[in-house]
Amino acid sequence: DAKTTQPPSMDCAEGRAANLPCNHSTISGNEYVYWYRQIHSQGPQYIIHGLKNNETNEMASLIITEDRKSSTLILPHATLRDTAVYYCIPVVTGANSKLTFGKGITLSVRP
Amino acid sequence: GAVVSQHPSRVICKSGTSVKIECRSLDFQATTMFWYRQFPKKSLMLMATSNEGSKATYEQGVEKDKFLINHASLTLSTLTVTSAHPEDSSFYICSARHPQGTNEKLFFGSGTQLSVL
Image 1: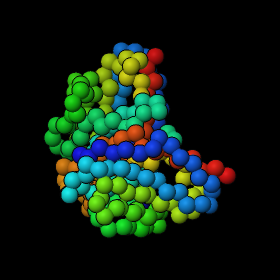
Image 2: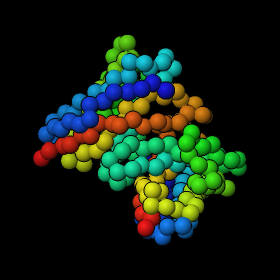
Image 3: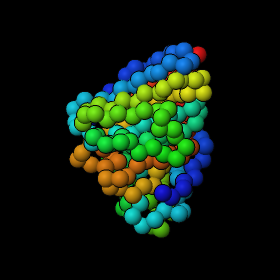
Image 4: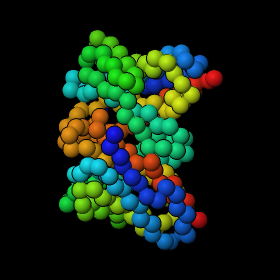
């Protein structure tokens, strides 16, 4: 699986958009980019995933660069409850797929 | 959404004893479950993949005789930490894969904080 690089932390003001970057320059053609988050002392939660096209769901938007070497997770209106560690995970999907978590980025949403 | 229940949420035990952690998928049958451990301020580390009806597949460096995994039914996987020592103190998290999907349908339990005295 591809390695990822994320800044260790960032913060944003409540109500503003949070843009979380991820570099995955060694991603292979059949790897999807998955984003999960982990709120303190809880299990991770799926957010969104994509292969090439930008994706949007009720939680977030995912922007993947054309060369697929990086992506950005966008939380359009961050709330205090979005404070968590966010993980970007390139992974091949399928029956034998398994997630390998990196260090992630700690997002702190301030009032 | 689908729910994965993990029990107990917290356990304190004496060194040398064994501790069993349960992971249940409450509203779906999971042929595959995963076990992770997480040390304070560190990321999750995959320990093993648990497949219903067969032996678990352990990641490199994880002692299979130390961490016994049983996936006897489609809704239950258990992790037993045998002869626990203080260095086994950690946050253990399970996850279960919904049969109608892949990683977007991977649901995590709320974790078990194990403290070995």
